[in-house]
Image (cartoon, rainbow, N blue to C red; front, side, top):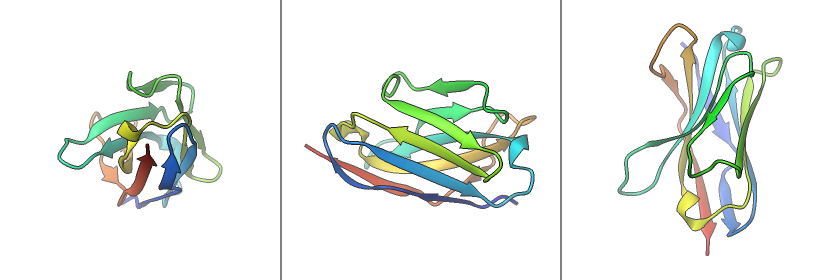
Length: 119
């Protein structure tokens, strides 16, 4: 079982930045692909970004490309999401997720952290 704990959410003005962190409770963090998802009120959860276990390959939703950057520190069992040029439509609860590299679907989820972008 892997526990994921997100932090770094908050209230920011349009155009501002936030950095989310997700700490994983596993000794084999480097065996997991990691992802960030978000869910706004009344909407389905959507993919934001992902990073492979070794950190060599990343993927982004079109809506955040060029503004968000996902990264990881395998020595600290942590994945990050740097969010720049934030827009009100980025407001949502952001979730961290993990999956073993041999699995297709994400297996473990954090409790989420709220990001609110004021206009």
